[in-house]
Length: 148
Image (cartoon, rainbow, N blue to C red):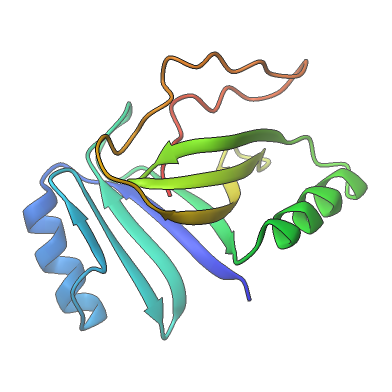
């Protein structure tokens, strides 16, 4: 099963949590000082807010969350067969979770991630910043896009 993902940068996490909890009619399923995530069933969506990283409030990225490593590989193959250049990130601590993901860029520069989450981790919510990312020629630098 696939779930649409929207990750939104906010200025004030508490104000935004209050607004989106009212909007969705439920509290977030994961909350940290700088991050909150709602795993919604109706609509089927992973919606997250956070104040981490570069950029301004209101900026967003989009994605498709998959439920298994096999499904992620199927999506990667689909990107390759469709001629979409992708950048992969594996074993990444992102949004307080261990994730594996692939990024593609839309025609207007919009970032799309497809990702599989293994589970919530303790400690730092955005690790691996010191791990260099080797990017293929022409690939997008995803170092500022660790939202999930």
